[in-house]
Length: 111
Image (tube, rainbow, N blue to C red; front, side, top):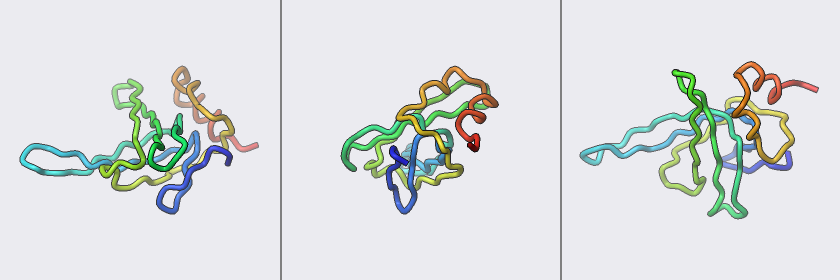
């Protein structure tokens, strides 16, 4: 895995399905943890302090949502790899134009 990074004993790479637990501050100093589950389409940054991942998911209404997470952020509680991909490219921007079935076929097929 050329594009893999280590995050809390797990390795992230392009095409992996991940769940990011993110702390959200609400009114009256309340905090809650919200999960954002999707596919890693980009890993950016040379050092651990500047490393960021872009995660894309399809919302319930069928709209694609992308979110950028800086890995050094204190608001990230946990990142769980749900499914690993064998994808070899550096970026996975092409999944923006694909349906769910076609995307799964390209990212998770066994060779």
